[in-house]
Image (tube, rainbow, N blue to C red):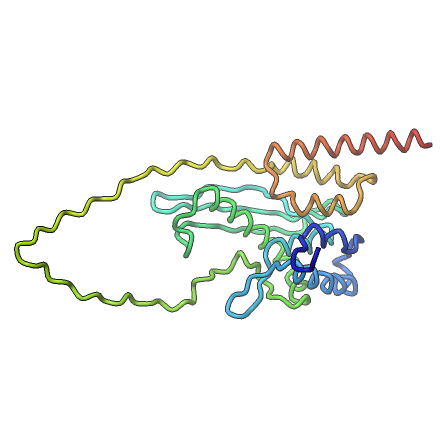
Length: 261
């Protein structure tokens, strides 16, 4: 496998697995160096006007190395008759100390540039993604800056805001020849868009149960990191499956240790 085809999973296998302490500047600076390499190797940035902004996956990686994971508290529909809009709240949970250490709010609307034709589930999902990035920004912005990147999540940027408006070129009206009958334009048929079923993401209680199980001593650090990087992508069914697998793994390993003893 060459460098160009390496995936996030491949790179994650090679990174150090020890946790860092956010209260110790020497450790967090070491994390900044590790973070810079991880973001670069996995191309987790978006270039906006010559500056590099880290995607939410990069922020999640930084948080997971500190034992800080996001919990989606709510995603609320605040739409109106003219606008499709969702608001999300995310809190940050410190797994090692069992406390909440930050929070972030965000919204997404189909009135934003480039989102006019977004379906409802995509607007809802982007609000959640932005809230995750915002929560981490409030807590870890200086670490991202130390890694050499802009301290604002890429998902918060409006990529089209500063583009110059291009006026359409006027087209000269063409005269209609005498006695020529111009047929009326046939309106295009209207096709009703299928209503997309909203994704039922894992509930806060399901995520808390997953985090509790991941803290069990028999669960390895690589297993924790892999699960935490993907926890906010789980729907309710996959979250139930993850909880069942973790419980089984814990039972099997505990029974194995007892048998060995």
